[in-house]
Amino acid sequence: MNRRKPLPTNQNLKKYAVEMRKNQTDEEKKVWYQILKGRVPKFHRQRIIGNYIVDFYCPQLRLAIEIDGYQHFYEENIEYDNKRTAYIESQDIYVLRFENTEVNKDIEYVRYLINNVCDARQKGLPIAPEYR
Image (cartoon, rainbow, N blue to C red; front, side, top):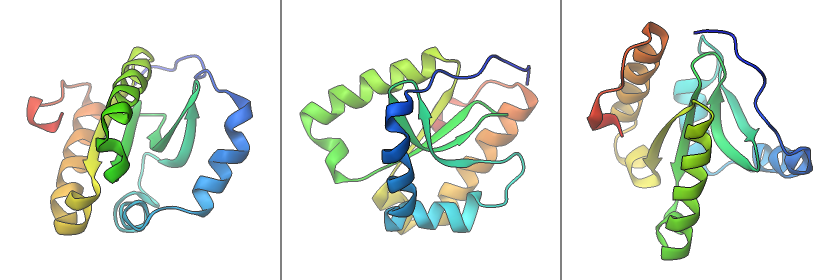
């Protein structure tokens, strides 16, 4: 992927991002330790993008991965998440989302999807619609 200018970051969120990194949910830990940690290209946890913090981010692939708990399904949070996703995507970042239940019920499927999206991003290919 081409080298791009650094992402905008709200440094006021840094302390919060560090706290979130220290207090990951069980599902975030599962994805981190079973799939993303040590992966090449490298992923980061709780990365600030603009005024938002994404669960996982790979700068080389311009890929954000979000693990959504129950709170994401309340009407007011759905609207916020849509705005947040639109902003992140406006930075030329692909957002891949999973629900906690997906992570808990079928981590191998989550791994499969992440691997496929990473491969497509590395090769500069479009992401298949079923991964959205």
